[in-house]
Length: 180
Length: 291
Image (cartoon, rainbow over all chains, first blue to last red; front, side):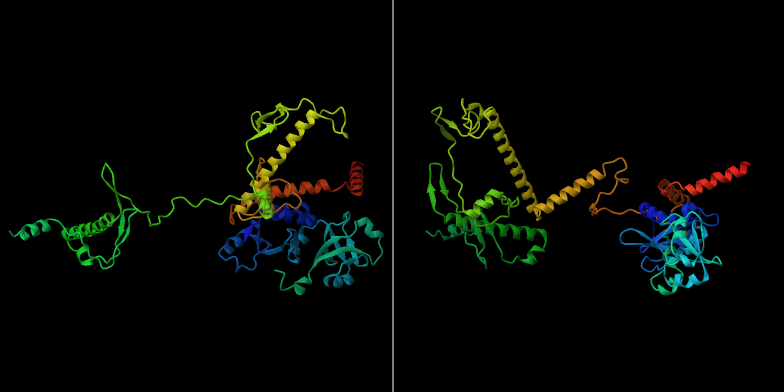
């Protein structure tokens, strides 16, 4: 376990701003308890300072997980968000897409969101922007990248892809062994 | 008259020239040294000081006696000053003080000459200058290859520009020859260094280049921290990564993260284009409020 370097922090923040914009501030500067980002075996964990201090007593090889896993750095140095980061993304998301009940299951099985399944959309989503996907009862299901801007979304046919799938709650089952 | 008594007395005053040793000691006359490998009497050596001293003295005397016996058996020459024994060459091999000098590395030409079996022939220092009709050095001061001894007339070659300066061309040619030779000298030296290190010359050159790259990257005010990465830039080996302490003060880490966030957010906001619809809506809203 170690703190992120400047470069790594930059890559992480660049990815997070795609979903929550400047709301990262609320992750860094929390009123309740100090939280920090820590790297352990290529994975970035968002963890309270208190738990992090306790985890320092554990050998690096033996430490499996701590706090909330936000994602991992690939071998090429890019950052990939995991579904485990969803609670924080959903809380501060800038752009949201609500899917109809008939579109919930297809998405939770790892498919892209087609236009026919979209119930509601935040206005002014640009193209290729990170969006968080909810069901109509406002339960976050996952996140993805907008395939079209909100305006263009209206023009495409019902079977056209509106949001590219990135992660969904189904991964808790599908990728149980590699997720954390 | 019986003189045996007197002789015995005389004899007892001097020690015997005969020395008995179980293993005959090695004697190196060239070095005037004798090496005795017989066992030392341990009991005498560990006894009181007096016994030890006399024992050691006796031992060394006997060694010296043997050496002197050998010297007297050498052929001698008689001179006005006295009698001289000529010593043979030393047989003891002493270790070298300095390391064995390295074999000089062959230049490219020397390697080639070796393969082709080209012998180096000695040229005389002086050469006959036919134009002047005198012997002059091949090179150097007043040498025949010097430009100060240039011919008063040069024939213009058939295909050359008649107005070109042939003297200039001559000078230029020589300059180029010298340059070329210098380059080859340099190359030979570089290759020599590389082979001494057990590397291929190309590998060596690559390493040198990388070293220079690292040096130049670290020569900015920020020690290369904010430098753009070159395309295909090799990863610097041997540099130790340095991380922040795992547990530091909360504020420090927070402020650092904020700095980075500000930088990222600035870049992000400058990258996004003006959203016309949003702008229109904002204007409309403000107008409605004014009403």
